[in-house]
Amino acid sequence: MSTVIKVENLSKQYRLGLVGTGTFKEDTQRWWAKLRGKEDPFIHLGVENDRTIMDDSKFVWSLKDIDFEVNQGDVLGVIGKNGAGKSTLLKILSKVTAPTTGSVKVKGRIASLLEVGTGFHPELTGRENIYLNGAILGMRKHEITRKLDEIIAFAGVEKYVDTPVKRYSSGMYVRLAFAVAAHLESEVLIIDEVLAVGDAEFQQKCLGKMGDISKSDGRTILFVSHNMPSISTLCSRAIFLKNGEISIDTTVANAITNYFGGENKSNYLKDICLKYKDDFELNEINIFNINNYESSVILDNKEIVLETVFELKGFLSNYHITYHLYNEQGEGLFSFSNENFDFKTGTNRILFNFPALFFQSGTFYLHFYLIENKNTAVLIEKDILSFQVIDGSRELGSYMGREPGFIRPIIKSKLL
Image (cartoon, rainbow, N blue to C red):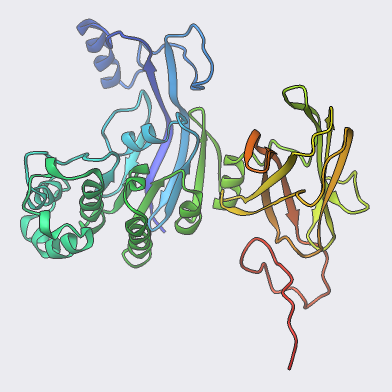
């Protein structure tokens, strides 16, 4: 299968603060260096693009030494925290902005949906903007006309198609913009987080359309989203960007696990000292297979125990603990708590027992809540613990692969 996108040693540097990009003399010297294939003489050493850290540097690398390839028909997910460089990467691929160093080679035409209203002229009608976008992509008028009715029907804006788009809502903007990008005949489709503006029904419609065009038309798709279930459903591969660099380029499941910090957390958290006032102090949270406390491996075919150790001062029967459990796509599975008994003064050690074969293999994340007076969360710690469950041993012939879903509750049945 042919390579459609090839990115080599790609970097993008920005200057911080309220300053210009330089003088005409500097711009001329940069142009002359680029013409001769030389390095930019005004590239400054910058710091890693971590938005949470304050430092004295006036330059920052939004992207640093990015290398990857995308083949025809691939659906590549790009994930990462805010400020990781996702949008900058897509803007460079779309030729909205130029890289500081490195090169991007794209085979074919690119249709991009980066921000609400990108590529639309507010004074033109929806119909006129469809023709404008098609012309920008290099399509002839008769090619656009052939797709026009299909675009309008998909967008669901028939009533407003001859109205200037400046009067559209943000959701209507996205509907029409996606319909144009998806139906016009480009080889590469680039979609940023903008789909989140649309309603749930339209988001599902868009995901279905992207799946269809990648499989039937062989078009290449780059998709940026913070919606992990969408990434998991649509993409065949994912890149996890962290502080402007590729942290991992791998399967979707592995990338999502890294996104949620699965590689950095442990099954055991001791001496964490999470406090509420002078009343409550959380000391330990551990999860393990029963009778196998020290092992970091958790098997699905053995009973699993979650242990919580904390200190209470005074008689506090109006407190209880609730956990929310999430899967590696960030979807909430269920919650559980100790509401059937009261705590005691001093050290409390509570155990939650999950039966064997309750969990599927995969990575799970716990959110911790201290609840007061049965309805007020006074202490919240999200992703306080992650753990990975793996397939235990089974007799030959008894395992046909991972079952669907993330848990396997035991459902009682009887033959009548």
